Image (cartoon, rainbow, N blue to C red; front, side):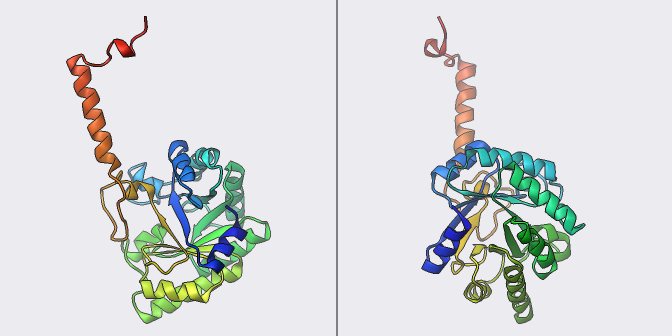
Length: 262
């Protein structure tokens, strides 16, 4: 999957599919299932590391996971999520850290913010580092927003989101994630800009959709956002298998002669 192909999909009205993955086996499954984009999200801080939010995730951890995913992806575009404080201090920091993502195997980086990060997006674009922007509910701003709350619910906020979308487009972002915003606002943004929009909790009118793999596979259930649809219950299946293993070990059924060497 390439950036020109993503533009082509938007122009032709074909939906873009994106899913998170954080290691080799899950990235391999996402790739074989035909995902257009695999996002190595800083959401790993919550669904893999067990933190309450994404803020503790480090650059070193993100690069480690990006390398695993990049080694698995044969067709999907790999996007690395820039963690908190990897680009906020200075443009120079942002360029250096974004470059490290590409060295680790990503084809692009994602960063949160609208007009406030347009300067950084422009700088990265000048150095041919593709940027996926992210506006609306931005998890790294959880404390400012007072929690993970829907953004853009009134007219002024919706107009600000549209302004942010146009700012990142003008700065050179090749796409923009719209998270946790009303369907009507997402539709207007999608129709108003030329770059693809990827929705998560932004309704069906975006050019594509993204979910956290651990959410849609039922592997994470500490909380379930309204926008998540669970397509499987891997956690329940895995616990059942582990219980079966425990029972067979305790009963002497496993290992049997079939699993033994002679």
